[in-house]
Image 1 (cartoon, rainbow, N blue to C red):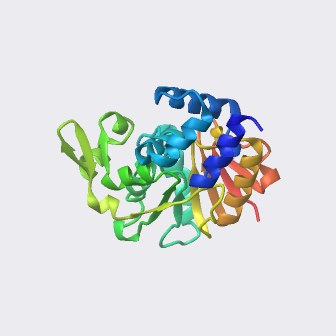
Image 2: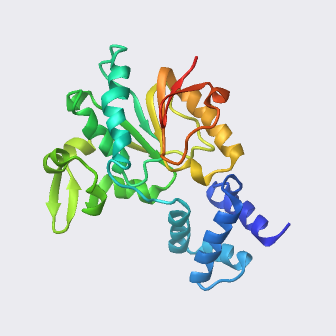
Length: 258
């Protein structure tokens, strides 16, 4: 077994993250670069350091979980969500939609969902579950402080209504924050919430192997309510969605087939 294979096994035992599910070349290159930056050129030595140095271990976990996010990422898809997807879900006479932002990173997506839903529901009837594997990202999301750049695509009315300006940053108001429940979930290992009307999983699948994708598509399918919708990222269209009992209804949006 080569040193990287041993490293992957040790990491899984230490923090319960299985690196075998990630594309090997990409992940090995990222980890090697981080390892070198910390002054190590050997996987065994680097692992021993991670085991004993909490700060270095947290840096490693943050580095693994790629947090690139912004509000209303790919705005045209949010328009489809507003004009077609949410109204079609509301046709089922729902007083409250069950929505899950499944790789929520630092909170931009679940907060965007809450703001969008204010066009359809009273705030008190809006709840979004937001999960991520990275505790650090979840903590940042709970603080809710963002750069101007992160808000670039957000409709102006939301920016004015739901944020307080602090120096050159923007802090999201508690009334939006309170409608999001944050939880840590490892998509590959943990059980999924059930009976969700809308699940978003965007810009995450690109990092996984085909085997991991297959596992996840099946888990997401089981997690959705009857006629629930699955919303993916702009480079993540599902090839042959019928294989996983999904039907494409708009680009990047898939309906559960029962």
